[in-house]
Length: 359
Ligand SMILES: Nc1ncnc2c1ncn2[C@@H]1O[C@H](COP(=O)(O)OP(=O)(O)OP(=O)(O)O)[C@@H](O)[C@H]1O
Image 1 (cartoon, helix red, strand yellow):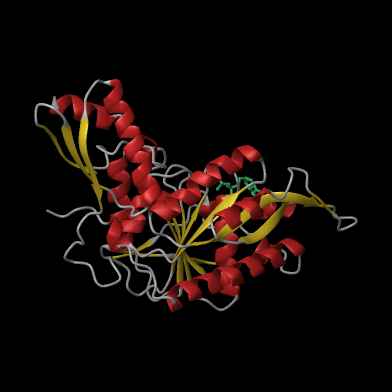
Image 2 (cartoon, protein in one colour; image 1 turned 90 degrees about the horizontal axis):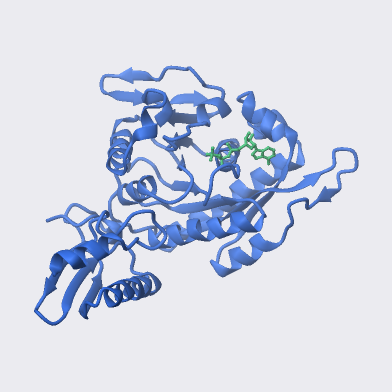
């Protein structure tokens, strides 16, 4: 009977993530006393909503299989011994960490990440940029360092300096196409290894360009570093917004403070008149920001120079310093920095609640 229950739990996805609670090793025990089953889960999130969703889902599955659910205990894992009071941080020389995510691909997540990084550097911050999108690394092209080999100092790797930002891409370190067949555990391992091996030095902020969606890379980063701010990139179309909700929920589950949403391709500014046209619709992002008690960091228009800048390795913030889009990126970077200062003033981030259990 226990095996049947395990099989049902294997089909139960962790809310907002692509894998089952068994795959994530969240199921700690399953017992059956002849009448009813007793299940114990340890999940990283302390959110009541997540627990409730799991209760409903598991209840339904067991009922459909004709198995009585006696006790379902859902708790957080005990704090691991090696954490400090602020949880686990494998890069103590970096003051702040930003995770840029989007619910789906192609919304301009990488474009946003590079321009925010450059804007922060222009504002005098020491900035690092890690392309964690192993499945489609675009940062080297957008930062103009495609084909530049990283320098090794023994086992450690020196990031490449571009536009005043220290850059490293997982794509520069793995054979092209190799990552396409990577499974979850390999992604986790690669990220952990990379965090240890790159010689970032002292930074005010390290920004991560994540693979689209929610998954292993996000979980691995959040477990290893206290992420100060999550930035969500979306486009105004309704379909994109559904995915955005998933990305925002993921930040909540990983205990990452949401610094705000960037609405990309938000409208078109006519170069002749300067008038802005909301060609994909507008107005849904502020409502979403309110729902998640966060802010819209910027509405970035569709602008040919944004794409051209990306293609030629010269992001618009450096390509066209005086233009309206650059002004908006600079303002967004200012708001992002402020959001991080607020988080720090309130005691910083603690990721100890989402650590894997250590036996
Ligand atoms: N505001 C914009 N105006 C014009 N072109 C844009 C804008 N934002 C992004 N683009 C272009 O759209 C394409 C996709 O952008 P980008 O690679 O940043 O998206 P992404 O969400 O990171 O995609 P992926 O899923 O591949 O990681 C690129 O060619 C980029 O230059």
